Image 1 (spheres, rainbow, N blue to C red):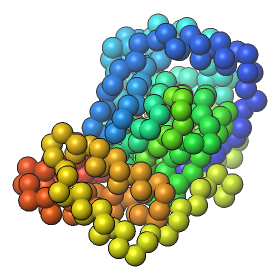
Image 2: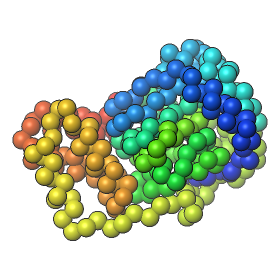
Image 3: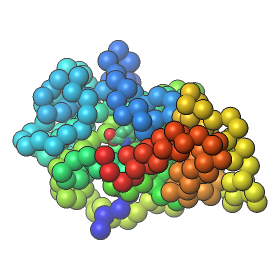
Length: 274
Ligand code: YCP
Ligand code: CO
């Protein structure tokens, strides 16, 4: 079984990367998948089924991907992808901007598709204040590192940076990351120790104190309360699955059946089926 792993580190050309990132500032981004996001995670389709950037969701389809106007505009990124990957297996390429202060709700990808894809991340712009997670591991993908991300496992991301984190995200129709690569690199090592970020142990009563948010939560700040729990998960040893347990105890104690139902559906949508 292949696990999330750092495949290699690319030797990026800073000037050419800067030129593509400058072009990307002017692209049209969409706010698809808002239910997975507290804050903003804005995405731009570079390659998909139709070549139309307005087709913003992952979907099942046969055959090769087409470049959108934005994909064609990123000449350096296009060369990097063409050099390292079997583009005939590529289904989707996106730019994703995680904006300052934003977090993703722990979730699993591809649940709505007939078959899983192979997910690759290449951070184009990031810093020491951007974090990713898988289950109970918080880690950092640094600029220029090529990662295979097992998106079928529960994962999340958080930014405490003051700039957008910009990642290139690729999805291939292969069973393993090795089949998506053109270059022969061994892939199966897991998240390396030097990428892992330690979290502190939970303080006694820490979960309990979050229950006080029951007096605060309503339909307008539901996502903000969830964001607070997710931010704590990135700091302290809360289990990924317990993010929804903490939310559940808040909504139950709030005496709001509508919010209890909303949280239950939200968890189902993120982690189980959709
Ligand atoms: C995706 N994961 O890859 C999802 C949606 C957040 C990250 C948004 O499509
Ligand atoms: Co995801």
